[in-house]
Amino acid sequence: MKTKRAMILVSNDPESIRLGANELIHNLNEALATYNLQDEVDVSTISDINHSNVLPLVIVYPEATVYGPVKAADARYLVEEQLYKGRVVTSLLAPPKQLTGQIGSLRTHKGYNPAEQRIVLERAGRIDPDNIEEFIAANGYEALGKVLTEMTPDGVIDIIEHSGLQGRGGAGFPAGRKWRFVRAAKSKEKYIVCNADESEPGTFKDRIVLEGDPHLIIEAMAIAGYALGAEEGYIYIRGEYGLAFRRLEKAILQAKEFGFLGKNIFGTDFNFNIHVHAGAGAYVCGEETALLESLEGKRGEPRSRPPYPVTNGLWNKPTLINNVETLANIPPILRHGAEWYRSFGTPSSPGTKVYTIMGNVNFSGVIEVPMGITLREVINIYAKGMKPGSTLKLAQTGGSSGSVIPAALQDTPMDFESFRKAGVSLGSGALLICDQNTCIVDLVKVLLQFFRFESCGKCTPCRVGSQRAYEIVERISQGQGRLEELDQLLDVAGEMERASNCGLGQTAATPIRDMLKYFRTEVEAHIRLRVCPTGVCELTEEIEKVA
Image (tube, rainbow, N blue to C red):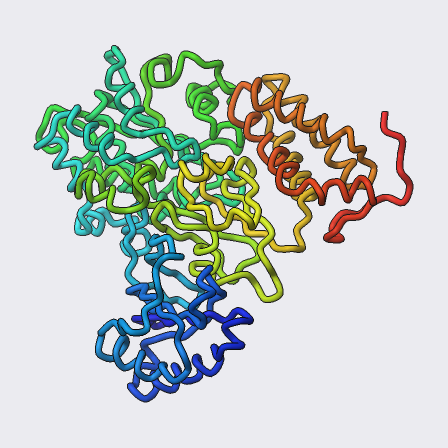
């Protein structure tokens, strides 16, 4: 399919249609045909993106120029100036006050892919992942060469710290600070571990990197090895990622052949090797200490902390554990500099974020956008709006362990600080978009079923708490719940959050808390009225006695 060089999006919400959006679309297509641009420019629609005072709204990509209000009579002039002559029509520009400023790229199911400012996914899909020469031709291993021949280990960490890069696994811990901790640890042996155990349901962003650009992770781990004083690294990959596993192994062999791994890399005294280890499908092994236990050949159960992996990690040695997306940012930062990286995103959360989109939207897949974009913009621009007849009810931002975000928070900037202030978390970046037909009770029941199944059982708060919470929510879904059990649910969630040994049990409480915080009325309808407002839950005819 031929890739279009530009796209025109026209708002098609009811108010835009009332104001002439359909006629505007017709005139735009006619104008494109007049200038013989119909095969180069795609015209599509988008719902209102919180810009209701300037409807109909028109956005022209790849420049992301926002016009509004645009009348049908303006169509020919807009096409002539912007698409034919390449000039912005200043007289039609929409006021920018209601946009976040983070809209910058677009991918659609029609194959349109305008120029994006990608960092993590810069090469994915554009090079042959099995050919190291294509990676090198696209500036691959340039950062590693620069680091080994021009920089000190402390200098590398300084740049990572100044860039403001935060861990992309969900917690958002400053990456440079973690690197500094491992650097300062006293030990002759240290390890670099890449957490590629992407087991969070709905999350497949790391898979895109591993399958599409495996050498990027190898380069990043080698850089980390030099900066922290480690000579050995491990990639712990989800067992189901067979293609990614094979491509990583092949990439490692190629890197050794070309001298980017092994001894005396770039003619220096730095030595570094990488091993790939496949997990066996345990969700809990995505937790870093359970991952370390598994790497050591033990049962994958979380360790008690402190001590932390930065001082007592793999085989009780100082260990850096970063996830795939975090490491993928390292070479670009070192190639372009910390200030370049800070030019994306927000002051408190620099850079970009890779999201997976799924649910009741017109486009599902992977996008990379600057930190600070809003959920409304992601849905309406990148996901091309809700499906016909659907309206946004809620979204989950990080797989099973992510927050449940009500529609009321869709204009909150998606960055670590803004979400923290709003009382929700960004999580891994899996966006599950749900419409009005989603029952919150049914959704939380499914999530708790997952958590109780995946609990390793080591600690009582998680093992018993997830089971107890599931039983309560299941009864509510059947119309057998009691109002006093909602307080019990909050008590169970609180204990799981406070006392669970690892993040699995702690975050299992998140959907319970959000359900009762944002959708308590819907939950109480199941109890008081024995009615599921969405018609999803199958309530029993008779109320059974609850022991």
